[in-house]
View 1: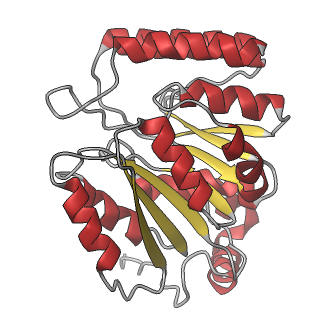
View 2: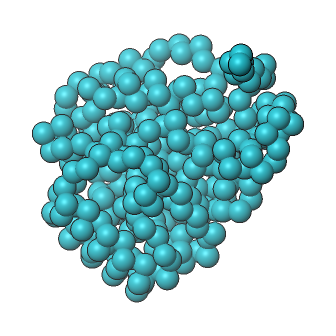
Length: 277
């Protein structure tokens, strides 16, 4: 029996032509199950990347983001790094990338403000049709971005959370008490928001353009408290929130992990604060 040849599709990925060819081969149901869909011709995804002391991982991460076959504006925010990241980002800002799928802008904080402040700065610079947050530490895989984007493109969702705990994607086994803390904070957040999320603290959050324009001017938290703050505020806005699984390659503290016990208590405070008021 001869081996069958792989399907060859001579069209840009996620284009109308690409989708029509694959739909003819796989059918509409097959495409839906495989995350195959078409983007509008003029669609642009904004990728907000907060950066603090990620000199070792940022080059690989940026390559992986650029490889995602969607037209993107990549917004990098340096939160006053001290390990050479700032100099690298200045070079990125001056480089002629000559890249038809990606535009890159770089922004700098004069003092270290925190991840939340960097995310808010990034949101304020976006112009795309949807916005996703991407950490610079390679814990989250950019190749999964198109799958997370699909519910917004289909018109079913306003916000999509990428969950590390839904169970059908691989994730590195690390700290038990971090897992317990994450699940406790998510459960408490759900009590106040009446959502049934499994991973409120996830990095991967995707927002439609309309939601991000209303959300970012309201954000106040400058550190990791921004995660429960964003969750509470999209719930109060009545957004249609979806959750999809994502893989997770967690770092150890020796590898540069930054979140700690103090951030957990701050998240607890923010859940109560933004849930009640």
